[in-house]
Length: 122
Image 1 (tube, rainbow, N blue to C red):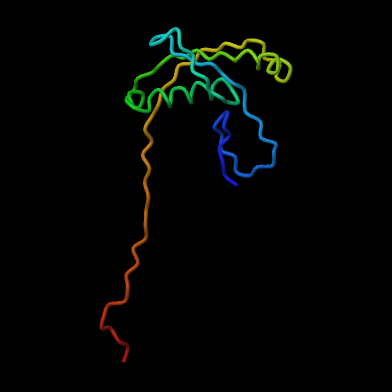
Image 2 (cartoon, rainbow, N blue to C red):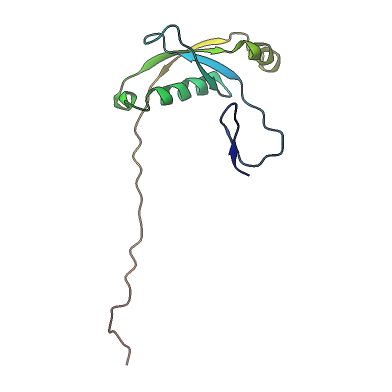
């Protein structure tokens, strides 16, 4: 079964009842909005920042042209105790500079010559 978790939107390829959502991070770009925090589920602050940047850049693609943004990532309250207990990390707030790049993809397909029509071996 392939499905998405209704909470974190992660792909679940087989349901065995053991899916656990990653920690919830609150992310914002203070340069553009210092009041709205976006919720992002990710295993680490860096991945939360990257996901936010990808969503932010989805329409304009300005980051693909060299623009960078600074984002603040804050571990949501309910995960702070869990994070401190399981990783020893005590600072729940991190700041990242995010950028993007366009990576070209190339493909090659073999051209196979077919037998010419009318060729016969006598």
